[in-house]
Length: 188
Image (cartoon, rainbow, N blue to C red; front, side, top):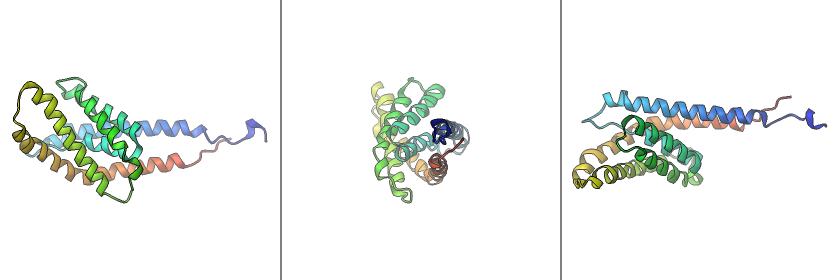
């Protein structure tokens, strides 16, 4: 068979890769908008869940270090642009969080919810402590107990409850994208 008559399986791979990027961008934007609007309205004692941590952690352990890093960077950058007092702080925290979650990609089992809940909980705790250290401790505000009890732990609990729904949606979307990525595209 001549080279030009062979079916090309690579033709659709670039399009699938671009679709994946578009879907991830939409997920990030929707979660950011929900976190900024709906969940701010549904806040309990001015505490709302951190959807961006859920997105960052989920893509880290589902897709690996590199994707976790980039998703985390863009999630953090959105927060920095719209709410940040210190540009790059959220981008850095989320980026490292996504990358660290990527280390668990090889032990991630799709049916098991315990690992995602544990990793998102740990990520939210690291985010809260990192924010405290950068924003408050560096300004000589040492009310750690107050910050832990009034902000970190309530946000952590609220995020865990919301994770049970949001993670399932992200997981479902990721599975659909992976299924389409695995289909061979043959065009003549």
